Image (cartoon, rainbow, N blue to C red):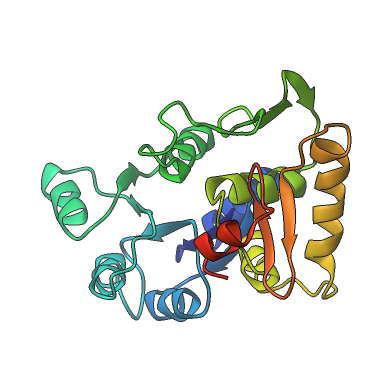
Length: 235
């Protein structure tokens, strides 16, 4: 999952980025509101952590622009202020959550996990398809009851695919959600990680879940075999 941090306290910005990367998130970071909007214009993020008091454009102004452009990315506001009025202003501007400094990093992680959930699809934060279970909170993966060990990047890729099960995802789309702007890997990196995933969650089992759609990308789906299936996916 890809996260944008917009925080003008240099040390806090650096610490947050380092610790989120250690938790296997892909992270971009900036220190002012205009830069945040530039990042948001160039990439899709799963969560935005937005400080309210920033130079060039404050966090609430950035948030309003995000919502005016009909972007539904979850936004967590950071602030040093703890008044009811400030919280109301932030929520009214379109924030999904609000965290007052100083805060425990574990609390930030918990709030990010909540923002990453899609309640309408997975109220218990577990995604399921064809005997596969992906538990977002605990990072556990099971196939037909057997636990499967994945690396951080493998889990992030699988989580994104199962959250979008039945949807064909291009290599570019997958890469954008797994790596930040500093990444300079090879063009076949997604193919490599798809191969890793297939070896762990598909090869030992009769039913295959990860399918290649030639010229389009990959899809996680219980079965993809008929023309009707491909038409249903817009192909």
